[in-house]
Image 1 (cartoon, one colour):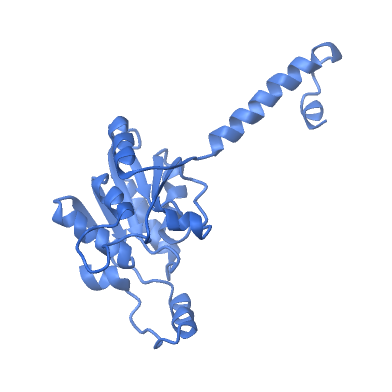
Image 2 (image 1 turned 120 degrees about the vertical axis):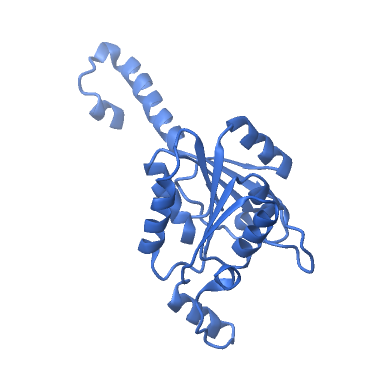
Length: 227
């Protein structure tokens, strides 16, 4: 019925053809908007990026903690994106929508191919993915990322993130972002850090909920390590 309303010019004799062609248009549009989401190993992710033959620009930062000023974060990210050619660059991140994940929409608007590498923990806890990511890779991981506890070895998710990035831009960030930037710098990769406060109110409420002292420093672990 909807297609018949949308295709009033079709005569009764060719209505079935119009239904078919119109249906194909709707299917194609829906497919174009959907991300390619899959479980992948570190090796499979590496092979994917090698096939693209593009520079990989990764944004790291706060996720669930959010930003005190998301507008400022996006302004800073926009300036970084302006340095790169969308035809030769992939914008990569942690796939989820919150926090620094807002950069995905900005990148898509500028014509960049976008990718996300995220721990299988995100699937387990139903973390919302950004609708502006073209390719999402879930990595089997017992943690959300960063260094494996008690070692200087990256978890599988962070290993895939760091090894496939040419440049990592951290805008604030928690433990995972901090560890990935430290590891990337050790590998001789380009790392840029832009200080940014996490969302103050969310940090205070989280501390109270967990019975912890109310925080007064909102720079985050990455800020403490890189400022």
